[in-house]
Length: 150
Figure 1: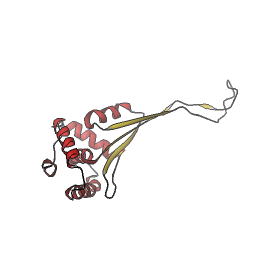
Figure 2: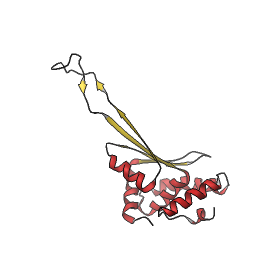
Figure 3: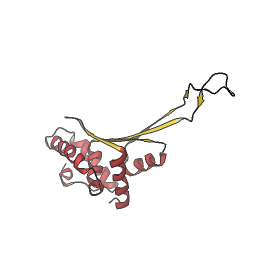
Figure 4: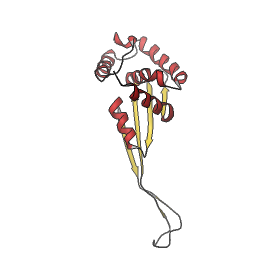
């Protein structure tokens, strides 16, 4: 079982930094763009799994800088962004485990209901769901009853 402090911290991140979406007849998505805080991306990957994508850009903008440069520009640091996303059953299990701590639960609940209806209609690959449910159970996540009978 996941520790309450980790779930509470995760719920705070979900409420403040994440986007949660349900694409009609598709999948539940839970994602965030975490910039300049690599520790948050590391925490997310350790506790949830899923994937991250990191991008880095070096840019310079045109701006007066004639004291020591031949061409006018402004020096800036590299811009680093990390995008984190989980989908489907993993996203549903994460949200359901964080429910007691989520301030925006009323916003997420209809998407989870749509996801469950989609699941109940048999539109998902049962073998893949079973593998994910087993993996997340081994990682200490509580599995909702409706996913235990896959």
